[in-house]
Image (cartoon, rainbow, N blue to C red; front, side):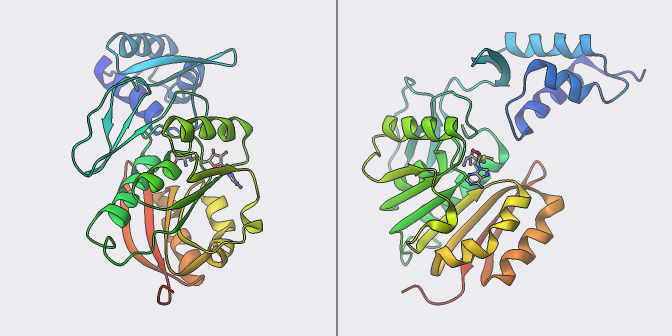
Length: 277
Ligand SMILES: C[S@@+](CC[C@H](N)C(=O)[O-])C[C@H]1O[C@@H](n2cnc3c(N)ncnc32)[C@H](O)[C@@H]1O
């Protein structure tokens, strides 16, 4: 057995949970870390307990199972303009800031995962920053794979007039609808389970935080649903899939305008070729 410090193990536990693409139970964390032969399960359990006592991790109990997650108990700044907070916690926004309330649940997306915060930062860049603020048509936004609804809510708060959030998971659909209400956006944000290819409206802004195979599979449909000059934000894939994702979207008439990487997760921002109409 190799020697390791308790602090290093706690760091590994925290990162395993923070970077997972789904909610993990304590047993999942033990299993993932015990693949390294120098870590024993008892030490992982102890590390989890210490991280919970120090407030860095917390247990959530959902549908009879307990999950271990990064604590989300206070407002968290995601970007210059975006702050995400649990309901019931107060935050007084500064001028130009938006505050998104997200209730805890099973759906993905409270802002703590790199794929979510990279997408939120990209939205801030496109909608709030200097790049497009003046000329950008922010009339109709689409969030494919909405989860908690966090990106759809962010779009509306940053000025997109009407937004549709799609998901196929019934829990996500319910939680996203609740979060939209919680943020008083029921008249501008619609959560739906309709298939992406059945949507009629051409969108001026599309965001999709989804796994690489799905992003690749929907590249043609995203091109069909995007207006000329529309912005497309893709997140949810690792650096290892970046080149292939890029190729799929360049082939479908998009131009790359920004690329961000964090903790080995990538986020791309494209513009659809052609002048905005
Ligand atoms: C990684 S989560 C992203 C959640 C949230 N948008 C965020 O940024 O944190 C991906 C979501 O996509 C949904 N999803 C997966 N495949 C889908 C599909 N083909 N159509 C619609 N939603 C899908 C999943 O149910 C899940 O809620």
